[in-house]
Image 1 (spheres, rainbow, N blue to C red):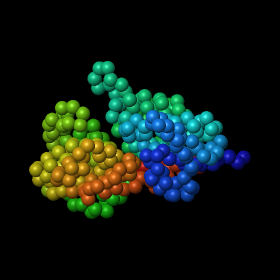
Image 2 (image 1 turned 120 degrees about the horizontal axis):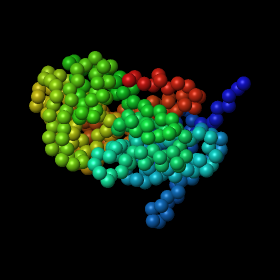
Image 3 (image 1 turned 90 degrees about the vertical axis):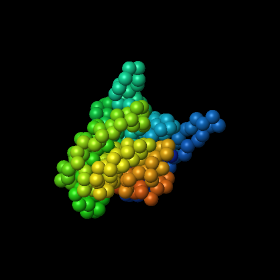
Image 4 (image 1 turned 90 degrees about the horizontal axis):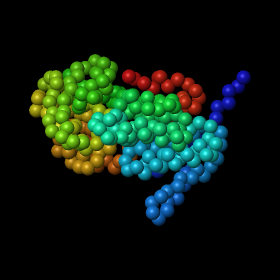
Length: 313
């Protein structure tokens, strides 16, 4: 008996429109038409300008602050649900609010869990995302989560550099698992930075665990926000005798004076993806697109095929 596969349609939230265009091009279908009306007070209303009844709908949008980006995704999911879409996948290249994934002091929210519940309530029947801040966030969802790794993008690039005496570094203790995964694939050593924070985004003290003398070091992290950690780690490693320091960070938030810190640091190169739209204005920053990875996974989801071949680690 033939199994009917619903028609696939891809739509974009405003903040991720360029990435969604690239994804739809790799997928081989045109980007769906969405019109957003905005009231004078800032309230907005997205509208699908084509039928989605019975379709498999992919809505592409990263949910980095400000909160309008998350709100737009929620409204689009709700619109698709109320328009009788059969399957609705929230494609979140960057899952925002993920740093609040636990109670680290009394009387604070667990924002990552709250966002997960809101996405499902709004209508998401599947989540496709990349390099979550913490792996356990997948467990905040009751719906299937396809958690992709940017290592499939970064590792071929790293290998193309042909760096001798390569050492992988984690900028903090929390990222050690990620660093060890890269080192296992690249058969390299690992060093770890131990840092203490005065408050959010401000580091009071940093120490290096391991030897970097005579090494070409690559720092690995899931995101770069103010770039304070990377700049401090790079400077520390050069002081300890490293030949060069690069960094690969999936999500380029780059807020505040991040570019200034990168330019003034000993970092030779910062390699990021286009999961978050930004106007890169530093010659030290290289952007690798994640559009092909997402398109391939979305095609596999549409045809009910395994996505395991999309994981290098």
